[in-house]
Length: 623
Image (cartoon, rainbow, N blue to C red; front, side, top):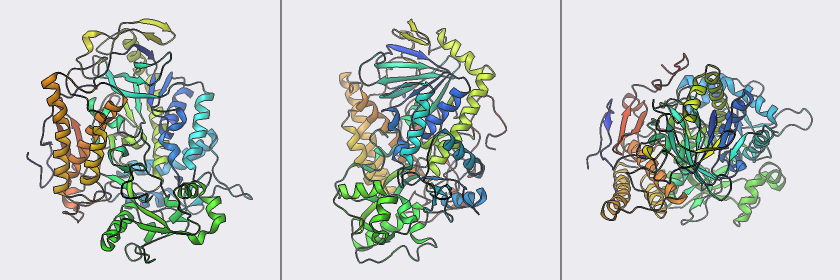
């Protein structure tokens, strides 16, 4: 199997082809509903899009994998970054973000984030979010986190910022009467005859008026599905973070970018060498308030490694911890915040205090054992400054998206702000399209059964119908119904994929480890494909097999990009290529999925993204 090496080329296919890339194998939809906009995800990004579109008069349906209040946002501890404090400016926020991004941020995207961010936060407050404030003045309390030179992190409930933002947005969505479909795994994108977005297929877990596989027909689809941390054995991400949005976008023909840049949070509670699944996060804000990273002898090893010591950008702190662990032959380091005292711990970090004590550690009296774990995908589905992907009518926002804001390493607490700012921009673009008649024309065509997304069925009420889809559409990628082609992976493959990725593409990577990971991922697929050819059998369609198949696709893309990028930059650490190489690698890798299942990996000409090819091109697309 050949592996790409050397200088990135304008177009270089991945080294291996797979079986035909089609929609996930699934039963034909038994029900369908119609909307102007379907939002997939219920975090800050998804719910903000939904609220803004609904306020403009659009028919919105929100699809979420768990319950409405179980989005990834609620796990965010530290806060949301914005230039709200006295003496702080968007320009200073921009500078910190560009430094953290290690030369790969798109400056126009960052400038959009930091200039529109403060007002977006104020609108969030107007929606009902309550941030911690001074008892006397009422001013928002701000803290500091890694990579920030100023206190600019607004927080709520001490260390429960995400939970408060989620509460406010969920209440607003329910008050607005927005249609929601909970406990639903999105499967694939629907397209009309012209190749434009026409909705999604999904599987609802449980029984009710909408259960099993169905479809939401809409001219605009917004992916806000969160992250992909479950491709690793240990992560701060919840169990539902299986890369579903990225996998859907790839199968739909969209470009993804920067997937090699997975941020490993430096301070995750270490629960032992065999710990797997979602691990407790110890927020960067703990270090922002003065906690120290130390080794077993109490030495503050980050001193001298960076001017900000423990508050250096996350990639630098994670590398510092890993280096010290290697030097000492240790499995973890420590975060020492005993000097906070019980009152500060209970007031400022009640969630972290409770999590530590649940696992037998009392931060008031002892240092906290910590080690890096997978935390955030800096890359994702590539978009322009209005959230538009390379597939007409498909948008992406939040962690699933790659806006160019984060570059090679996300600045702490920029994630909630990115979701908020770009969600508002997406809503504006969609509602402008509805006003111009673009989206309305599409949904009318869908309702009439035009193109491969059309379906026969009887109307069950306003905007809803049940009945089988068009059987002639089942072999069309992006059409309704079960495809013929690639196999589904057994649910057990999830754990094998996690093991492969943890050992081959984790914090420390090399050409050897990545090539080994690529080969093992190939074998996982090849075994399933061989069974399909031999016996005509594949894993039964279901949530666990769909998730495993999505994880496998996302893992393949990550490994292909990490193998191609022959340097160390940001949160991509190649042991065999320890230096940053701006002359060759200050550029992005764009990945698409070919019809035969192979990956096309090509590079941009610079750190700026070329504009996605989308309808109604406008002046804010990247040059």
